[in-house]
Figure 1 (cartoon, rainbow, N blue to C red):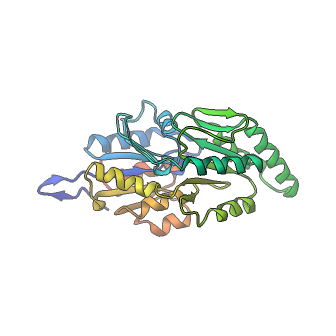
Figure 2 (spheres, helix red, strand yellow):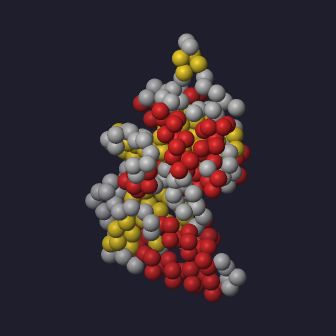
Figure 3 (cartoon, rainbow, N blue to C red):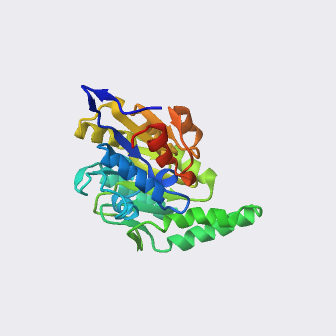
Length: 295
């Protein structure tokens, strides 16, 4: 177990970056009382806790609410960073011309997609209906498919804050930080991801089944954690990350202590220094309190 490290007789400030979905949030996208209690105790103990998520900053803030002491937020996979007072520190938007070209192509191919901007998450006007119809077509092809389970995954997208329907989203004149694609057709999803694999300015990541996220290549959770650590003058050996999914790989590569949730994908567990309980069993609280002894 890792206890407080000490230099010159003083406790060393730790930076603890925590993912949201599948990590701090349970299966209903809620933060348990136990997780809130322990995270707040760690902050009171003098450590810097940050949320590091693929979600928009305003969506993360809505999920945290008033229950958790103010924390910095690394949002949209590292392309937006805010301090503990909600003040914007730095942003890395997608190239505007390329973002608009991608949007035009997605519109023409009739995909369901989401566009994360400073103030809103834009979706096609018939987005929910489009996904439901797609699911019914998949059900026809695969009669044994668990329809309820699949639709629950899709419905999670529609619980986000500031979701805004628009007709004809072919072009935007505001900064775009992420374009997300969701489809039940995994072969199609893989094909789209492959088409961007060698793009010089766009990276592809994922936080869940049935979706991929297009983000600026020079911004990810790893660069976000590094930027915040440098901003607060915290060394890599004093950086801790906790996550579960593919978009957490980048932050696992820049930390000293890497904690995988029990429900994490193999790529995360392989990179971990510790494995904690699942997100259903207060795994974040268990790691901070019992495995790291930070409370």
